[in-house]
Image (cartoon, rainbow, N blue to C red):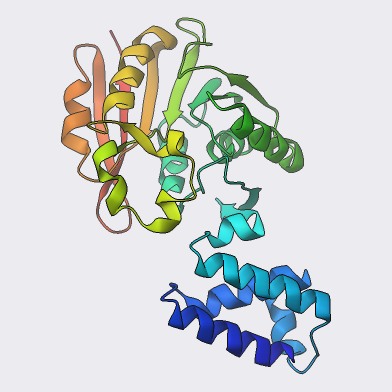
Length: 276
């Protein structure tokens, strides 16, 4: 079977399996099986697949048809122009989360110390270290996630200190200029309504916050008062319809509260300055 035929067959299977972007997905999986760039598929469309390549490609198609996200199959996801390794131990970085980084760069690009709470793959922490040069800490309760984050930081040349702890428990008081987080915000009752790729494959601890979905936000706001220096910023990604409820958590001492929408117009990132 030639590369062109394999690509057509894979696209057809994915279409029949109601997989989103079937052509692109087939290209990505075939490239992963061949260890090549996408341009190679079109420059060498008549090349015959080797048996081992066909075996790998078939397995990747099977995994995707069974709901496994493409990023977990390839082990890669781009974030802010850099390629990060991902495993089922970490949430797959989303494009909308880049707005968290952009918000920090807009409001606190000269911050000296930044902490990323629930760092997962390290995408936010590593990016902020490389973009700002600040001293950056990445916190996560999952030892497996921290292993992924450390590997990403080392591969990308980012000096980030990673600490295993529950939210901000491992950080001294009044020591940070910026607290940033993409916290879990899915209510437990919404589990059945999630896409199977998310529900069945991404880590539950990174998805579900509790019965309401706002439990982690409340804890972050409360702990941020202890950890932030005067004038420091708290920057958090918001879940759908989360803006009003999270804004209400900000009591006395919080100033300059602002919310940035994503490309779809959905309120996506909340930022507030601590000035007690």
